[in-house]
Image (tube, rainbow, N blue to C red):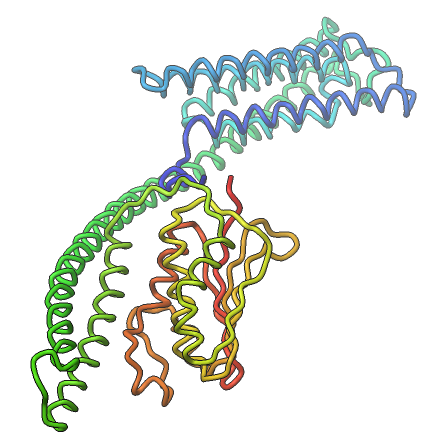
Amino acid sequence: MIPPLEERFADTPWRRTRWLLSLRWVAAACVLGVVTAGRFLLRIPLPLSPLYLGVAFLIVANSLYTLWLRRLRGKADSAGLARRVALFINLQIAVDLALLGYLLHFSGGTANPFVFFFVFHMVIAGILLSSSGAYLQAAWATVLFGLLLAGEASGFLPPYRGSLFPPTEPLLGRAALPSGLLAAFASTEFITVYLTTSIANTLRDRDAELRTALSDLVAANRTLEAKDREKSLYVQQVSHDIKGSLSAIQSCLRVVLDGLVGAMEPKSEEMIGRAERRSVSLLRYVNELLVLSSLRAEDRRITSEVPVLNIARSVAEELGAAFRGKDIRLTVAGDPGYLQGDPELVAELVRQLLDNALRYTPRGGTVIVRVGVLEEGQRGLRLSVADSGIGVLPADLPHVFEDFYAADIPENRDSTGAGLGLAIVRQITAMHGGTVEAESRPGMGSTISCLFPAPE
């Protein structure tokens, strides 16, 4: 099921927190791989016990973070939730920085090039935290690095023997070197935070503007949908009233033509016959308008399983007399197919497709209804009606599913069609989550296809 537009574009704290948790799983896998490869492939005498212990701590901590996140989500409506999430992220980054310092000590100390991972954490902090929170993390990283430098310079925390990156210059007794390194490290951390937070804040402002615009668009779209539904209800009511009057007029004219009220002059009979045929045409137009407006006005629940092939055969049998009257061969073929939908609507869809094919297929032609699965690599059902009729010009083909559209061909100029049949087909198909396609060449017939997704 596709979520609403506003949900798909929502940037919630949960998404940012899950992203951080995902990064941490990747980091745990990478550290484990590097340590293992360095020890057993490169034969570097790394201290496996403390390094593996650090990885285990990272995995356990991330598991606890995940459980904590689920607990926070269970209090989604509680007061102060945003503050709790911010503290949650701050805690994770602070612990990660301390763990990074621990891993650096056992794999080369301050000489380890992976010390630049402190910068990556500042980028993450600048993205996920407020400006003040990111600067506090930069200060905490500086304190940790300063403690490593002071410990190495004093000999209290000498780099572990057999480390991955042994120092080339001992810091013991060289006060100027650790001071310079600390100054360079601190400036790098704070400058990174400044740049990242500046960009992140600008993006947040733009994001807020986009959210406001999206909210306005969603509200406007809902208003338009409501207005369109009101219009369809109005057209439905008017069409229903007109249909009743037209039916009465057509019945009266039929009575007169059948001679039940007495004989008529030939000229009078001809004129009344024309009126009766026009009333039948207009009644058909109103019926199609009533169907289309009803579809657009109603919110129908589509829940049952529909046997498409059986319905296609039933409708073909219902319209068989009309096809035989024009000596058109009508065939229904395919595999038993099902879709989640409304049987009445699917029957109306097939009826409109066959009526369209009947209207534009000359005497002695063929019409084939096919039901089958979609092409390889796709899941779903295809219902198509192919005819050997007059076809459609390439310029008209993109418009055949539009309301009241009639292609500019001689056969249409005297046609009694309202140009709503394929619009009804498109509406019913869309109500079932599908799409429509049309293929045609002038004089070579047309194929109208309805593609339905597979039931979930």
